[in-house]
Image (tube, rainbow, N blue to C red; front, side, top):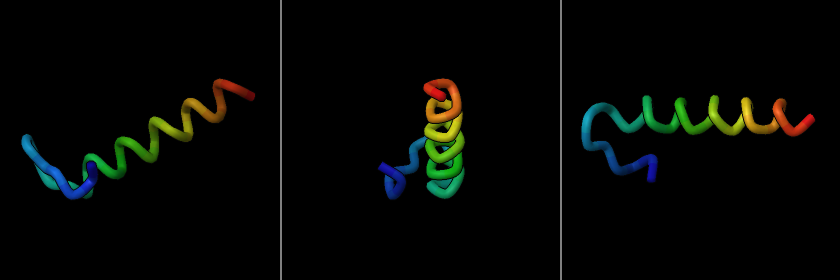
Length: 29
C-alpha cells in the first residue's frame, strides 16, 4: 500500500501507517 500514492508522496502514507500502528500497540498495552 505504501507504493500507492494518490493524494501525496508514498513515504507520508508509510509514515502515517507506522505511527498508527505504534498508537494501536500502545493502546493495547
